[in-house]
Image 1 (cartoon, helix red, strand yellow):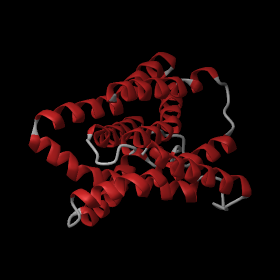
Image 2 (cartoon, rainbow, N blue to C red):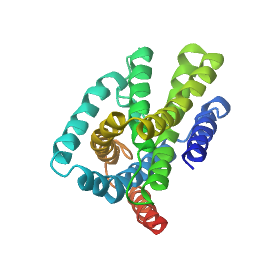
Image 3 (cartoon, rainbow, N blue to C red):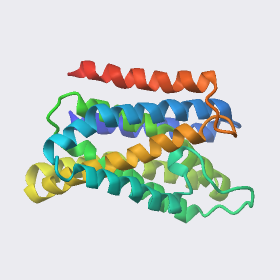
Amino acid sequence: MQLHYNLQLFILTLICGSLPLWLKKRDEQQSNYLLAFSGSFLLSVTFLHLLPETFTDIPAKAGYLLLAGFFIQLIIQKFTHGAEHGHTHLGDHGHVPLFSILFGLSFHAFMEGLPLGFNYHIGSTVPSLYLAVSVHKIPEAMLVTGLVLHTKGRRSAIAMLLLFSLITPLAGAIAGYAGTHYEPIRDAIMLLVPVVAGSFIHISTTIFFESGTRQHAMNSRKILAILSGVCLGLLTLIFE
């Protein structure tokens, strides 16, 4: 089943990430609403699925690991310049630290793929997590393609998109196989799940404040996008 989910994740990331190759200009405001939706959905799945799972498995350590994951994401952001939020904090000086951004995003993509290979207690956790990560990767992949297209050209953008689309499902497949066959790796992944959950909380809450207007105001469409993400997160509970 997880092979099927990994394949879907790869295809969705690849298709949506290719949009900058065909669209001359994207609507920035619509992209911000997509970010708000994806952030609220990711946060909902984190609270409704990942946190109950991790506090069941390692109740004594979960809080420390969540906190560590939150601040690890701050370190990753130094490399990505906020690209995991769907946009960058590069300003108007024109220089794009492409290697730094791609390295940080690739590390983040591998990290968020590891919990996909874990065997959870609640049956709805796996499909819900795959769906949340898939939605989260749409603006990420579009940004990766757009940055490489702008700086290196179309051929490099296609190659980087293929590689980036593979990273998260490959991490999930590796974690699933190794965690099934090697108990120490399974235990390590168990500890990494709350770390990634802490990273998700940082990303989601940052998206809320940064997507939308320049003053980070909560207009009606942004509120609707956030509520839609929360509602979809609640609907994932029916998978149980």
